[in-house]
Image 1 (cartoon, helix red, strand yellow):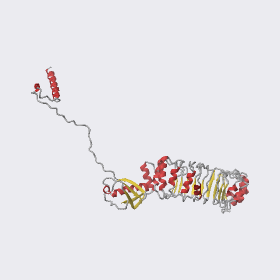
Image 2 (image 1 turned 120 degrees about the horizontal axis):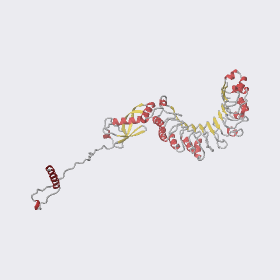
Image 3 (image 1 turned 135 degrees about the vertical axis):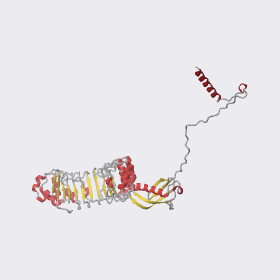
Image 4 (image 1 turned 90 degrees about the vertical axis):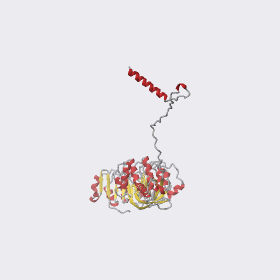
Length: 488
């Protein structure tokens, strides 16, 4: 009990002392004159929040460095020398072009910078420098491709393309993925050695398409490109066209792309390429809804195009064809309704599925005296016109009349006037005699009679051993290798 009372009295004294620390006793009060004055003293409180001392950052310093036609924007690091800056610019140039140069830097007006000087002391933000190549180490495309694949984490499945000579690269039907194509285009960026590039039937996704269009103008030596079936459309053709106009192209193939509304834009692209000699746009659904201006038609007429293929389109009104044209392929539309005027300079002509028949062929072909190769498959020519047709062309060496209803009579007639190379597949010729085979053997170098219902085992009994040895008969194939190798 005594222990408990002492503990209670101790707690009371503790509370009274705490209250006394929080007040000041007034001197005027007589009742407390003998009590000393107690003043509350504030105790500093240590905060748990820590404030970092301010760090003074270096001002940003960035410069532009031009190496040949490439321009780079680089940051200048603290304590970096001019030599370090030149090495960094050289590495960026190598990544882009594939050449590792040894550089010396000068100002825009030609003042030389010493390699040991501090870049931060000599340069100010936004300075423009020039990288002068003193010597260069070429990096092979294969090495560059492997580096690119490693950087983008892509398997190098296209390495075989860069293993040999790279002046002609074919990626046709490669089934490459978008990332693989991205690595491929990044690798060939600024490659001046590529002259022929075949990308046919590789679908270019939207992401890859932008890279492709940025890489194209850098291929300064590219003269022939095949973009068949690459997914080019009405919406993205203008961007492709803009990239192609910067190249020295002589050959351009855009077959099997959906360009229904781009016939005028395609002609504008052709005439913008002064060296273009071969152009092909097969099955692109081209039509003549947009009118071709007289000025554009005249430019096409005066162009240097020698070979043109517009087969399987919906063109109902043809402009004036190039005046130097040597080879032309049309098809899929009636020639009578096309309004086309065939130039007399033609040496090779293909009119596939153009409604050519016995009554209209003279109207379109009679002035073409320079024709050496004539192909007219899937038309309506019969045995009544084959002699006149063959005799229209005094220089004829190749004739293809496949899928015309010539019958055996037309085949017999042609055996007397056949050019050296004759193709008559699927011409409804069945009752062919051994005399016709013998005549063809003596007048042609090669005659293809495949897909006709010719009973060769029956007629071969009447052929000489020499002729039987020259005939290839396998299933529906029947090919005669003749003895004539000269044109008429």
